[in-house]
Length: 280
Image 1 (tube, rainbow, N blue to C red):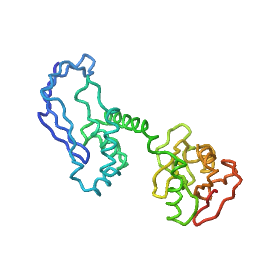
Image 2: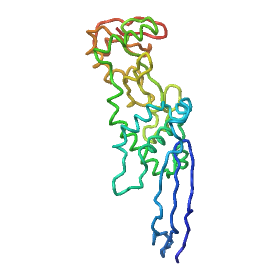
Image 3: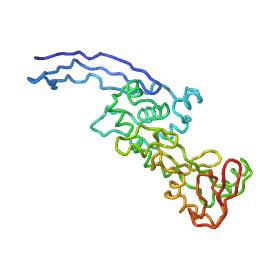
Image 4: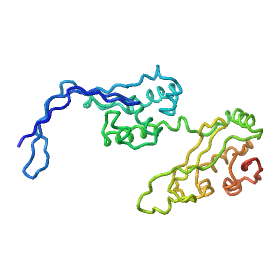
């Protein structure tokens, strides 16, 4: 038995991210003897799918751009330019999703914290397709992460220390370190290790940032039940701080972090300050 279904001649789907316009000929499906739907004959595309950005970032208000994507306009265009070569579809797929559409869709997904289907459908993608796009964009970002998330060089130390001193009048500070719990749905195996002290499942993510909240280091390897002190001891921070100790620089930390004698072997004391301690 042959079943014929005519595809919509022209459709338009809109979202804060992208618009898709498609057109196709009727599609014929052949039902096999055991009831499984098997592809028989598909008419040729009269017009291939075309993905176009619905929102022109040049005309959007900067505030709306930041709310939607959590980045300003200049940063988004820079990301699209740098990731273009990593996200371009092979030649054999000339109708693939353009890099800028992939980047905008993934940024909207990460900014909204919603489900993949919620972002994928308005973007003109199925959930499995968006899942592949999400993987590709994140993998491309990881290739460039070392260009942006780096510890200060020796030449940058005076500027970094000056910014912290202007903020809180604490001398020789080059970074603030703390952990934050990022909630998640835990895997069935070893579920208990993801339950934190606040009784919900999470990853305990350690971050170091500058006075202007620019991120210097991220460690997202440990589940929520792991203490901040353990994460610090098993991170790259002790080695990096050990290399900089001759410059007498400190990290601003909470009381949950161990002293420097436990971490990078420098015999300096913890200096109390408002809201936490600093390691000198």
